[in-house]
Image (cartoon, rainbow, N blue to C red; front, side):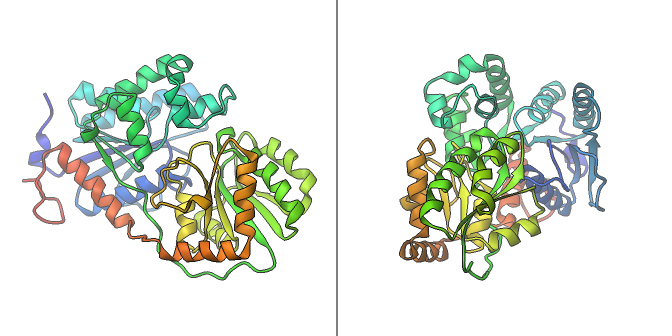
Length: 392
């Protein structure tokens, strides 16, 4: 039987996440905005995350489990905090499927608390491709049923987690289809909320060069080796072309070795804070989203808001429908080479710039956090009568 004591006192909500501010990344940014919004409603908010950095005067509690501890010890401590804080909370909201999702689902079931879940990716496909066992887009992976044979225990664990959730939020129909079709989650339990666009900004156009820019993790499913191979072919015909890769990850040494013969035409930088990343993107010409499967990358939304066109792999979950000329087959060097060369054609590029200017970008952080609020209210059957804490 669920604890209904929230009806007699301010609502308390636990946000369970792997990363949090000042870490850079989609989940960290989302949780921060959501925590700020929930706190503004008068709700008691606690954030549980891994990390070593201190807080920055947040108007809510943040519990950080040090990454310097041995991995098993840090996970046990994290799970212990999750259970303890879940007992004190009225709603448990997890922001990844495994590290945060598993202890949250268990605690919710044990204590009879509503459990909400935001899904931002797929751990099975990502891990299998990262380790080099498979190399194919995520839809193909699921259609071939490989998830059952590759990681059967992890599949069953994730199925338990997603089926335990009272409400699930994700940001693209692609992921919605995967979790309804292969994990048995009722479609009505999943709320679709696209990632927000930053405010539009007018920035100067790149002159003298044409830079393709990528920002993200250097892991195999990001398809960056293919990017360098394709760029090498493009560079033979377009001496002004440049490639900028921003990030870090296990494939960095391999990427540097592949890029070495191209000299200064390829630059590889460590991951940057948001302000610095915006500056690098603003000074480039085209943003890249080359992964085997792209869901709804924040980096591309940020680039579009800066007026930059993008090249993105087919069958993506981007918030806006892009022209077919911007898309490529993520398993084909030729397809990517052709997409890059189209962007280097002046007529095609002008057309792409006009396309970006015509996009509707009205999905804001205010819209997104209100959808998260609505999900919490729905889980507790809270009627909305004004903009702040009204559940009586």
